[in-house]
Amino acid sequence: MDALTLLLTRHSQPRLTAPAPCSMALENIKQAALRAPDHAGLKPWEFIVCTDEGLSKLGAILQDSAIKSGKGQESIDRALQLPHRAPMVIVAIAKYIEHEKVPREEQIAATACAVQAMQMAALVQGFAGIWRSGSYAQCPFVKMSLNLSEEDEIVGFLYLGSSKVKPMPKPRVASENYFTHWS
Image (cartoon, rainbow, N blue to C red):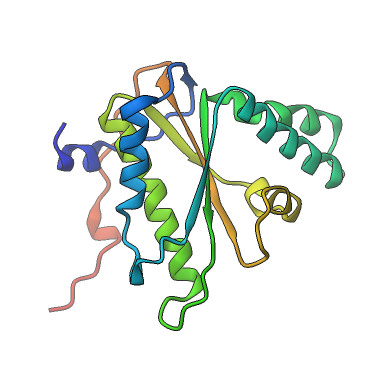
């Protein structure tokens, strides 16, 4: 698949199963993240790759968060299983580095670009994925459990694996609804 086709047909896939990327495929995904736009070369990110027992460890953190947040039993039980919706979850973290020319928001954006690059690298290698966020990404308890500072940000959870279903093609979007041209 060429790069333009990849970009024009990109899609998220929430129904994932084994296998997950491994070996060279996983290394390609990691390297794609490290090539993301990065003002001043700060590499303001950290990625936690969760598989096997790592998924259970992440689930336990989410479950503890649900308990501490006073969520109902259904949400508490569900939290434990959330990471198991895929054989791999990559927690994407923007690790803020104080810099006079690179504000925190730009470092978060750079990390988001790295997540996009990882998903594209997975897709082009025949894997599927979905980038999720939600309340757990914003939860102070989850951040504390991952040893993050107050300035750090969980940009999202990238779920990766193999698609259980063939993705439906997305309709083409009218670009004129989103772009204004100044000449």
